[in-house]
Length: 368
Image (cartoon, rainbow, N blue to C red):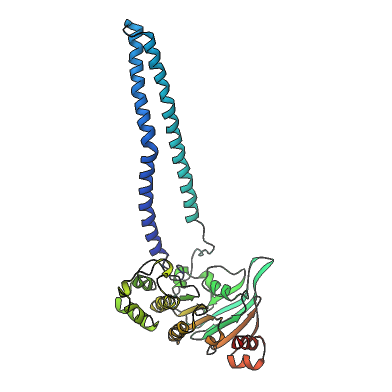
């Protein structure tokens, strides 16, 4: 979700600021904790050593100190050994911390699975169509997810993908968003392979609403604003109205400034989904990806969310992955998938008339 809204820079800055503050505090506390006791003991032992040296010179030079007393001072000398060991242990702990820090840095700097070519092509809009051309995708040769998948999505049309779990529907959405690259074939935007496009500019064309609403521990306003950081307050409110979210937001004690908690846990499922839709509406992308956006909602919440989705998809190129088939009957084209391949496709009425797999899925849901 961070990638699809090109919000990586915003969140990276927040993360860097928070972790830098924590790192400085932790280092300061660790330094004080690890060095306070060893240093005090070490300095104390140095003091004893100086006294021992002075006492020894007194015995050897002018016999002003008795040998017995000197032996006592020699014994005290060995008091240095214990704090010296503690100092060594402190240094070891610090080195261990540095090793952990290197591991964290390694994770943060992990290479992306998707890379941009040396001289990518700029893109600002979708002019004609999206084409999946003989797509193949697999994690290994024995685990094929998609095989020879082809599909054309004309500009302004809504295409729905249906099928049982594991048929490859979500994989197609992830490939279109270029979270992964295809192993075979091409995904073309107006005839240009998406691998050749500037990644940030390409993703600026896309909006996504998934089954699990991805929200952050911040205000509702800032969560919506992520769709378009430079937007005005009026634009944010208008997006919320289109998403049927403004009514419940304004009823909250702090309105748009209300903090929604980790992963939006202070909101209901339907409310979270409407905030996610408002974020996508604010971005106003030419291409929208909906991945089972209403499947986890109750009937009443689904009605509000589906109405918001219908408004958002109007005259917009959309790829819809549907679990509840009643939500995609108005789609311009429906593609039925099974085990990574297309088994049938057509309009809702055409597929019902064929009495094939789609008809069976509809009958099963109507029976339930």
